Image (cartoon, rainbow, N blue to C red; front, side, top):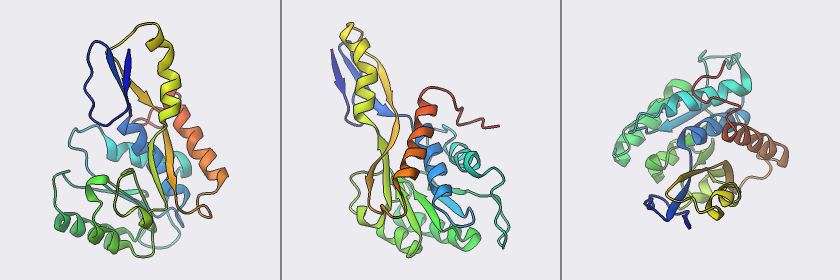
Length: 212
């Protein structure tokens, strides 16, 4: 049996795949942006062409941390705020959306969808904390951290079934921080909290689309 860990790998009788659950990733991203924000002013630029509920999951991740995430001063909104666009949108469309997010909500911690990972978009948030899940981004230095799959943890979880001869499966890897550029902002304690949330998602202790 073989386990493919590359993106978009195909499943076959003797090949299983390992990838991160996008809904779980969105939830952890919402939690992390809220945790690193000032006065809860977290936001996101997201695409969800498959209609998985990523905006809802991101919002719930922030709410899971802070409950009623409303700042003391205006704009008086419930954070995190999520602005969406189709994944095929070009740099100009994403830049316009980023400008609207900034103007409307003044976020200071923002998750940027890989589809929106353009220099023009990032320049709209010159002093804000930024996150992404695009590990191959040419703009990695602009991000405080990158979210992605815990590949080693996923392999360890899948190994028993693979050794038993079970193939053709899609295994889900827990979410983790694969790159951390700002260790002052994202302390070991905050990393541990984010990993704890990811583990609860992986074990179905948290429903990312229906947080009470």
